[in-house]
Image 1 (spheres, rainbow, N blue to C red):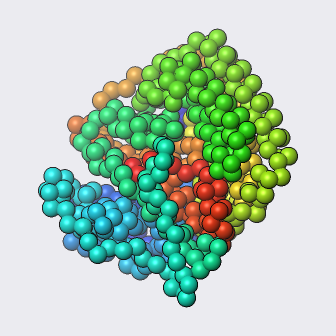
Image 2 (image 1 turned 90 degrees about the horizontal axis):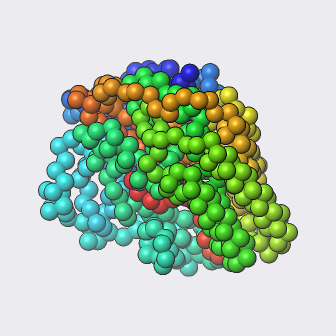
Image 3 (image 1 turned 90 degrees about the vertical axis):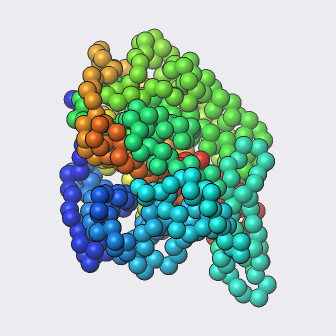
Length: 509
């Protein structure tokens, strides 16, 4: 039986005058979570899709669809009442030139004003990339905005250039003393226009884009994209393929979390802990490489299933290896809990209250460390997650130590799933036959290692992709990062940043 995502259960047309009230009602009265905004420029109409999911599988997904003529580019903003929509609206303004009435801060977002002029609108159909580059007119007088203007206030810039392999990101930390009053992240220094490049490409080409824009979570993103295509074509994915997909996704989660633990240990200067965690991450990379041929699981997801099958002995070895590594992770966790100097840097530092995590729509381990425990594998299950036994860990403190504990706890649950799946793989094909792509649109989703990942796909005439929209978890969680960084000392900043485990590359899609 195929349990891949299907088109929306609840789709409602919504007039602009009703938009704010309807969105707020879904969140307040129905306990839905705002998940993303998809903007489509159709022949003579703007089509905006506001995506929400319920608290359980029975509630399903909702989308409110707003349509209006293209000559009217003004849309009511919902960000004041649903903060999770803030960056979604800002991105749509920068990319499409839509104006969200009532939004307090539009412009200078993806396209920085000191590099690009306003009004480029690169996601519009009529956008001419060569003309835009030739006529680039940045604002030479641009300066970052400031909020703190008290006597003695100053700004400490961090980035965007770092040593090593760190991606480009700028943080503007404002203060009048030792504690950060305002933390403003400025990202998108390497905006890659993945959604624009996808237009008029084949589904296979777009699947390759999905896999490549964020290497450390390549499998989760490729899976979400493939599930969207399968939902459009009503492709019945074989059960063996569904379970193998889950097994590989959990290996990716386990490896990702080991890497995030490395970063947290390194941020505190804990050399031995960093070395121990890095060794385990490397062993997990080698395990993935030995099983699949690629350390980051590239080239495995295909529309209809998987590109290849695996020998039973290789799967048993992988499951046993993962189990042994998790046992060593458990030992490392016990050692870290005994290090008072390490705990002093994490406990009661970088706190995100539960109400704020929910209001900002935070996802993944960051949200669950603040008590907001919505995991798409549980609340909107895909593949066959609904048929297997695992827990969704949750912490309540919302500090750096709670986020660290989440990584260890989720690693154990991933290993638990890998064991179950390796012992419950039926015989059969790993890929369903698929004809030419059918026209249509659908959402694919996964619970990626960093949280909910959404991939919206519309296939047009000739099997070509007409619209591709990605909402990665880092894009959601970067919006809420300032909640943790503010009110804490400057020296806490790199540790709080590491505890969030966010990806700049995943954001700069």
